[in-house]
Amino acid sequence: MRLLTKGGIQLNAKKVLPILFLIMFLVMVGFGIIIPVLPFYAEELGASPTELGLLMAVYSLMQFIFAPMWGRVSDRVGRKPVIMIGIFGLSLSFFMLALSTQLWMLFAARIIGGILSAANMPTVTAYVADITSENDRGKGMGVIGAATGLGFIFGPAIGGVFTNVNLHTPFYLAGIVSFLTLVLVMLVLQESIHYSTSNNRTKRNGTWSKVVRGPLAMLYFLQFFISLSLSGLEATFAYFAAVKAGLDSVTLGYLFMIMGLASAVVQGSMGKLTKLFGEARIIQMGILVSAVGFGLILFTENFTTAAIFLSVFGVGNGVIRPSVSSLLTKKSSYGHGTATGYLASFDSLGRIAGPVIGGLLYSMAIGLPYISGILLSMIALVLFQGYRARESMRVRG
Image (cartoon, rainbow, N blue to C red; front, side, top):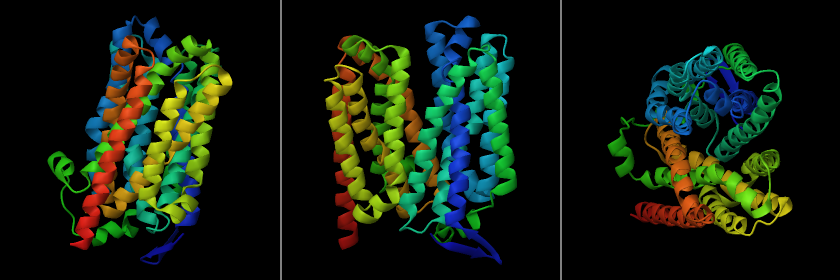
């Protein structure tokens, strides 16, 4: 890890990464706390199943729209203030949810939370790109991925416990956790944009048309297909596991916890993996392992097989996003924030479409979401191979 100096101020990347890990872990804990209770809370306020689906989707929709904007803003004004805006937005939305007495108030809270918290992931990812050398970039991205995964494991578990108090308590708790995270960022985190190697590049304005037609478009679409297949699995596996293995919702929580831990472990090893194989090969291996995981899931018979097969999938899926983020920030001619903002937007688009498509396929045949996951993985692999071929031709040319 490098020691960065600007104007006499030093920023030790090795010391900053644990701080970023803690920040993203707490952000995702706060986010995850409300997951188990939000459906019941919405139903209590009169939400129909369709309205509940819209309530979940509107958050991802706001992130899809606003993540690129926040990425560009962070390139101009700095990472720290934008991260603070994102965490403040989370805290505000959680308190708004806790105080909601009508359904429209829930939608308002989710919309505001989605708009503001869209700043978090792209800006933290850009921060990592700012402070790491290209050799250590994969390790840094893996640290953030592991923090995100672990936070999302512990958050719902904590939320489930406090749901027993009353339906409002998890939202207050999530708001407090997010507010404390905001204080942590304010007091401890230094600004990183001054150290970004991307500042030495000729900057171009990133727009949707330029991104989807640019030389790195395949990396963005790859992330979309990976996110699409993952969210399709998450939306349907509870029903699939109940039919195939008779597993209940509590057991399902344990299964996703095991999958998340497997993913977090491999993400924590991204530094060694990247130095051994490089991002491109890791992405290829990750896609193939994910496809194998989808295929194995079709043969689920009991808790043990489900845990093993989901872990295989989690290991493959877990290495893809950090590797794509690392490769993108190395290759993009945009600022780090702009590049990661569009990546977060493609990820959100997959999370919007995935549950809908997964549910539709499941209604046709219970194995279709996982067969489609294999096909989507293969499409992602072909896209990435096409990207590598063009990169190779460009280098030779």
